Amino acid sequence: MDLKILYGENCKILEKEARIEKLKQVFFDNEGYKPTHVFSSSGRAEILGNHTDHNHGLVMVAAISCDVIAAVCKRTDGIVKICSEGYPPVEIDVRDLEVKKEEFGKSDALARGVTKAIVDRGFKVNGFTAYTTSNIFKGAGVSSSAAFEVLVAEIYNTLYLEGKLTEVDRAVISQFAENVYFGKPCGLLDQSGISIGSLVKLDFNEPTKPIVKKLQAPKGYTLVLTNTGGNHAALTEHYAAIRKEMEEIASFFGKKVLRDVPKKDFNKMLPTLKRRFSGRAILRALHFYQENDRVIKAENALSVGDTKTFLDMVNASGISSLTLLQNCYVPSDIKQPVVLGIEVSRDFIKDGAVRVHGGGFAGSILAFVSDKEVRNYVNFMKKLFGENNVFEAQVRQVGTTLID
Image 1 (cartoon, rainbow, N blue to C red):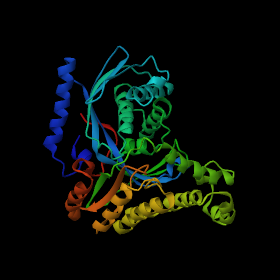
Image 2: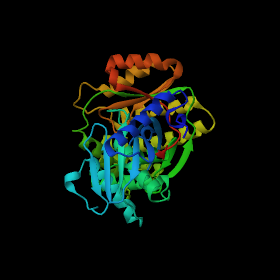
Image 3: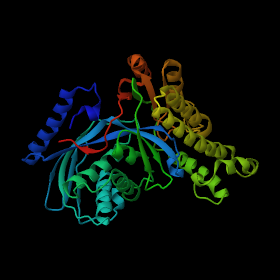
Image 4: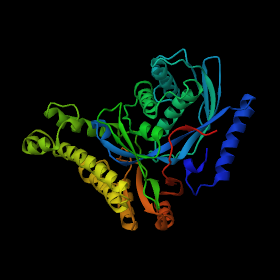
């Protein structure tokens, strides 16, 4: 495979090839024989659709030019062994696929859950040995766990299933592993973006059968992700409150999710909603409707090459997340690093866009920066947030794939 498809036209091909050869050598040094396959599974960036997937909304997501690569060879003893650089080895038996609570939050659970979902679809699998290395950015919320899940699904798909799993199949299987075996109630956005690749619009009206439309990313811009700091560990209740409040509004109309409540019905009942619900819940519901509209406008803009309108929608999404969704900082937090990062970026960037990235409250921001501004912007953000907290990326054209 042409590595420029994975890492961008301006990538250093010799460095990428050396990384793959080094991993193959690590496999050989430890196992005594050569791997037969090499796979790549990328990180992802959420472009639009902040906290809308769980209410069956519209999102825009992109696979990006960082990845976990795996050197792999079949086994015949039913054992899956995955040795990831910097982490304890994972080892499971494909004949032992019960949920194990002691594995919650561990990579073993993800591998076991993916295996279970594939077996439950009627496929027969056997073991494999894999050695992996990753350059997926730490702390930028680009979903390394989803990259791992989809990677395992594609290894099985290539080695044993004759490629019968579709891109969406891989995503749904991976989400199952994370929800049921890993213990994280995530939506399908992360896995879909990584499995499908490119820049895509996803319609989650039927969550396990999203409607996928691939789009052309704007040329002349670099994605810059900045980890502004903060700890996600104590934020679960804040994330859960967003979904809970949106669904409370939906339940007023006798529905489970906001996607099933027409906007005109929501607007008509605003006086009653104000008496029954908090202002924040109403604002978060309003964000849901407006964010869906932004995804549609951004899609239409990209289809006709209107980069300005696309960037306007990304900027508007950032403002809505701050003022309506209210997930850019925890109310008691006076440091507010996410808001600081967004506002200094907005002041610095003359041609581009910026918004909170992912779940919010702490962590990362995403910026589209014109190629002529990107060097100065990256240097500025590194001075503000630290050398190792600012990452550049390009949109990757393919999803999780066999590369050698």
